[in-house]
View 1 (cartoon, protein in one colour):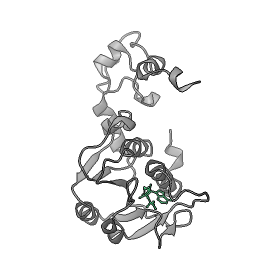
View 2: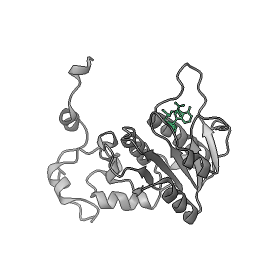
View 3: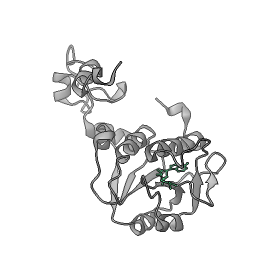
View 4: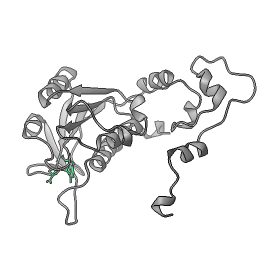
Length: 216
Ligand SMILES: C[S@@+](CC[C@H](N)C(=O)[O-])C[C@H]1O[C@@H](n2cnc3c(N)ncnc32)[C@H](O)[C@@H]1O
């Protein structure tokens, strides 16, 4: 299919999800009356169909993993939406944006509604948070001295910290990390996209620590 033939967001929306609830309405308070009446075309897994956003978040909160994700945003990094969406898929505890508060939400595909987000003005704020919470800060970057992610022992309670396109992680972030890990590459490019790197690192955590029987 050519790119200009791809359906727009509205067209996709009409093809996923479910229509209005048929039959007597359920009295479970997790259901949202408007979704029951109009149908639920959101990008959510089937078990959450017709659930109110707050009910979904509460259910996710009972099961969240103890890893956090942080990304530096001193420029305007366009990968943050992707990072948020992937963090939601892998059920990260929180996503931390370090630097500028504003970020482009488009890539998040509305998953930011279900994901706890926290802003820190600078790296010091993130490191203080991690210290208070007993979280090991794991810098993910391709600079010298990094241990291979493929063989590193990722701590269960950790913050996976990513840099932005161009400069990569700041010196302050690298210095404050307990561990720096790099993703093995074999081609000519210096680095991969930060959103892709975040997905790989989160999945490395999942492979090591998650209960795969609980995946859906
Ligand atoms: C595009 S890279 C930054 C540029 C990079 N420091 C360089 O040498 O050009 C943006 C971010 O993606 C992540 N990243 C990209 N490739 C990576 C790799 N091979 N290993 C670990 N992290 C990587 C890191 O978090 C990095 O800070």
